Image 1 (tube, helix red, strand yellow):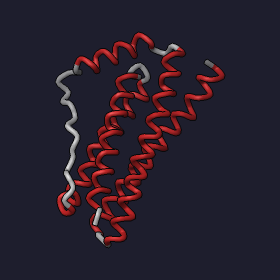
Image 2 (image 1 turned 60 degrees about the vertical axis):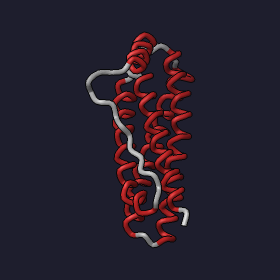
Image 3 (image 1 turned 120 degrees about the vertical axis):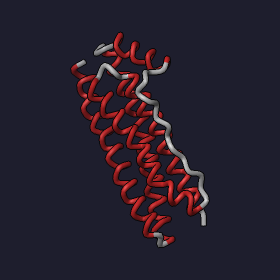
Length: 164
């Protein structure tokens, strides 16, 4: 079986999405909705990885987790991004940057959801009830995330392209 590869691909996709969501939140900290939702969705990536730990162990895949930073204080890069975000604020350049970031994030989120779909299909073929349950939950969460990104694109586009 090659389920370990599908598990690792789903893990990689979750880690990539975590990184992009965290960057989005820091880069657009002036937009409180984007900041808080992106931070929440990034923390859910860690939960997604936890779903995969037991099957990763069973199938010989590496078990990945996300070491989220503690709330002791932002690191230098996060402080620089936050400062840049505050300086740009609601300037139209910030809006276009947000739209570009959302486009890239949408592709990453979709890649993650597809990784869960592939893994779910493999779990069904292997008749692994525990993995099926984990992948169903993981796929549903992954789908919610790309739908949020698509909704943000739909909200931002008309404001930036016509009204801005």
